Length: 391
Image: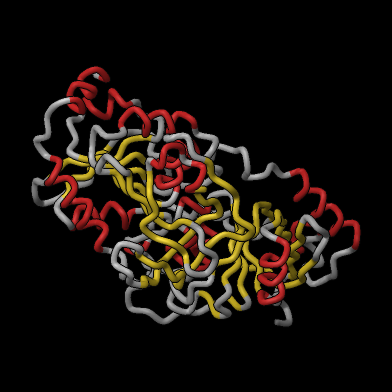
């Protein structure tokens, strides 16, 4: 490690981790979380759901297979920073076009390596997620990059973390949503589905297209009347970052369209459905982030290993009138992982069935969505009358 620039990770509680600079040379602040995936660091970095967060990878060796353009989940990385025990400066992969450090430098992502990530994860698990600052030594003293930080610099980092706004109570959706509606190009005509983009991943759109759906992606604040004017066969509520209780426009849209279209929600979309019908969400101590989360399917009794990324959960008991019933539960802590509406063809899951990265145990949910659309297609009566009233 001799000759490498020094870096600090300072948490808002005053805990300091000393390591080495990686990626873009600079400073960053955000909510520090951890992900337990062994692979998929590129997909994690480019997942808009991580906007506002510094991600610690628990797997110790990150970057050895480089970065491939076809594995991007969005057009750029959205993480605030990256933490790893060891970043690989060299990669070996015939699909890769560049190293992880080159990607981070191209997009201004600050990283730190060489710290005890096990100790950091234990602190986050015991005390909950914390805000933190990554600071590279050259930012303070560019002429002495290998020198030690002094206590005043460390205290300044603590104050920066404390002043940084919490993710709680913030609507981050406008920062990640599509600016304009757009259709995903497919080689076949299928059932048209409107995807409300709260920070959607590319792989989700691709999975929907693979099962015969024509995806049309619209911005997060698209009105119900604008959605129905597209004459869709179904509605999809995407993943995304931030506190699900804040974007009330999304709750209103989901409520007004409830029952008009077969609806599938993932992650933030799942939480928005719960809030739309009068339920509550709560922030978890350290969330679920990784590709090895065990979930029980209550409808089949099967256990599914799932990919997850969320820090909030739906309180099923808070939903009035038993409008939704549980379909999936997390086997680690018992939190709600999936639900279905008691009356309408509306269902959702808290995890990521597209599994990029991760296991493919839950990809059947995309086929189930198509089945719901086919069964609903051509329905008449009250839903259609309600739909016309929105246009």
